[in-house]
Image: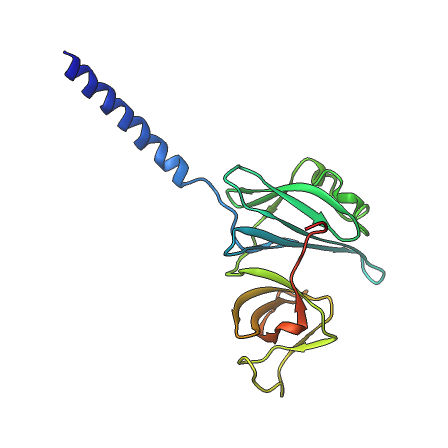
Length: 206
């Protein structure tokens, strides 16, 4: 009798575990890519790096930009620090078709009060517009950086990016980084740049 009851308990437990597994397997996770106005990269060290850039108006434009970074956790929402001039805390959470970005004081970033949607304070939903294999983000620090076809190759007739442009990193190799730049008209440009031509995002106080 006891053996039969134990077998029944084990069978019930296995059934519950099996029924839960599809839910866990199907739970959304943070992935690198373009989410409307947000570039997002998940690094091999399980950090999430992001760059938000939104522009409104014609002729005289208003521009809202800020960086974000945090440690990816098992929790539904990953705590992040967002910054440009000042740093404000927030979260980024994966959803079925994108992410939800929440920064209570997000509209206090320079240029953002009249550009960034009020929903940023409670949860701004951003759909994924492109999946990317980025392993990090970088900001160009050189006045001009040619996107070379090979690491150490010639710059002749190669496209270039300029200071303050933000790129997705595809690979690192021997003091070089292979990066992708997305233009305002959504064109992709890929090439190699030297380590000294860019900087990685570093949250204030870290």
